[in-house]
Image (cartoon, rainbow, N blue to C red; front, side, top):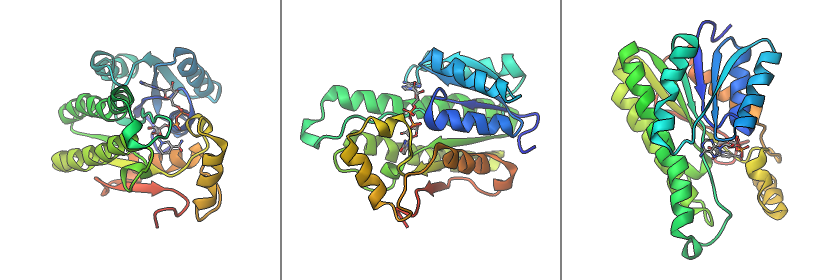
Length: 247
Ligand SMILES: NC(=O)c1ccc[n+]([C@@H]2O[C@H](COP(=O)([O-])OP(=O)(O)OC[C@H]3O[C@@H](n4cnc5c(N)ncnc54)[C@H](O)[C@@H]3O)[C@@H](O)[C@H]2O)c1
């Protein structure tokens, strides 16, 4: 199995893309630390993994809270003896609105979870991987981190920051055997998208060259590849998984 005897950490793993990634890594042999702010949802992801014969443990962490994020790596080591793989998936958007209507609170909420959260997670994971001499990280970015995002300016700024963190931290650590990559999903069928107005969702599918929304499992496949030894000479890459949108 691809991740036999390895331990993975996935943030915001109680739903959507994070849950699909957790299930995929566990099916490929990893023991998974499932983290989320929604304890019930996180526990459900653990149950799904265990029901499928995998190993997992849950730890509450708000991605924007430094103490809670810093507790995740030690929890992985306590629970399963080590940490090899990390997926920084926590990220939030706000309801679409023109830049002049964005409140400071909208800005802070999005930046704190999406950008500060990825930064905090990377710091603690890289510190651990440097001392271990190995490790592979995937940050979940977005097409919003590659191109313009009218009506979603805080989210676009945060995801551009996630891409910058990915490439910078990848180069900083390339010599040390630590790989850092990003997956940039296009429009994927999850609750985050379901919360947008119907008109906006139909618009997304129509604009995608494959004429459909993506599935969380398709993001999980790309993430598993980048985390794995199959991607051993790949670091600092932002892999679009978007049905051809940005081609
Ligand atoms: N769905 C899409 O179309 C799409 C497209 C591009 C990028 N993304 C990115 O993928 C990631 C996951 O999105 P999703 O669509 O699966 O979302 P989702 O809404 O389906 O699930 C989000 C999960 O994050 C958890 N969460 C919320 N706030 C949190 C916090 N502060 N700390 C920790 N966990 C928190 C929720 O409890 C939930 O379990 C995000 O970074 C998002 O920006 C999604």
